[in-house]
Image (cartoon, rainbow, N blue to C red; front, side):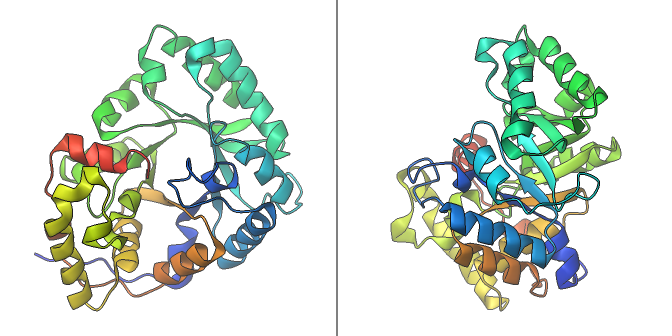
Length: 305
């Protein structure tokens, strides 16, 4: 049976997008080799996203100076009516929970905001070590103080997102889910998280751009997936769509998700993404388009997306 979702209006689709701004603070090598936005471009990107109806920005203390750049390019607004919900991530726990808490407080200063939507544990493994409970307690304290509205966890499929949710009871979770990697759809993880009334945000929806690369241009670790990717692209084209439209449509039409995080490294990418998000939903059998590959391969493909 075809998994075809009802079409969205452009504004509804765009409002479900979250703008990932790692490229505001990473160098070209770190930003998946595609480059970094200048500060002027970052300001233009934020303005374009706001005008289009995007209402969430995703950043991290571990994305170079992205928080500081974001603070300089955000439009001025009263604290009672911020233009975006801002989600940021924790620093590494390697130096202890107290410093993670201090860094989370400093994140607000760097972004020049009094409060933000959420602080999220950047790496789920930080919660599973001996300092995990103390870290979670300190983040909950920030929420109690009103500095962050929510506390969440970024998790991979291998991290057992449902198990983490049951143990720590986060307000939201970010998980990788894409047209190519549908594991968390197939095993019921997304629906379970939604049933637990946890806000679900999808990331890594472009799977390192694999759908956009010609077979000859695939990285070595994805070479074995070349024939399958070619067939998937052909199926998408036969439906009258392009890979960008298909990848976005799959994610935006997941009923479990409140937000779909997309990262861009140029204004042209952002414009293309906004246009594709508003395009009609193609008639495709989503399940038939997932990438048949071992879990280890899928995880590697999505690790830096």
